[in-house]
Amino acid sequence: MEQILPPGSEQQRTLPWAQIVRIYERDSYTCRYCGFPAAPDLETWWQGSLQVDHIKPRRKGGENNDDNLVTSCRSCNLAKSGKSFDSFEAAKEHVLKYRDTVGRDYYKKHVEATRGKWGR
Ligand SMILES: [Zn+2]
Image (tube, rainbow, N blue to C red):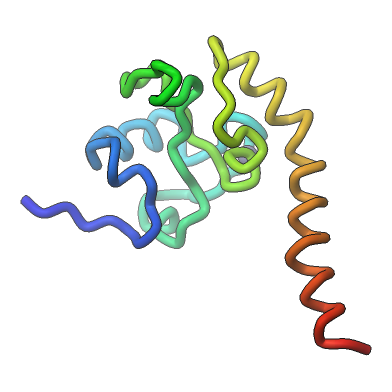
């Protein structure tokens, strides 16, 4: 059966669709890091606000088992980037510490820069 996934979904390369859904269901479509209820259900998730994050990335030896996977919103996933953690608690601490900084930088770079370009 062919799997249909939204464009840009990184998970499609590494995780089976059934597992992605299983993780979302387990975490109630809520970001495990910040608690943001990014999507009430699969239908809404389709709009792209949630991702499945590896606590320990694959290229750092992390595995595709459920224990190494958490539901994450985009902001938190951005804050965590490619960093590797041995436990969810350690990852969460890092993410919550840096997500505001990352968000502000992103805003400056993409929003304010664009505004400047259009002039006033
Ligand atoms: Zn989050």
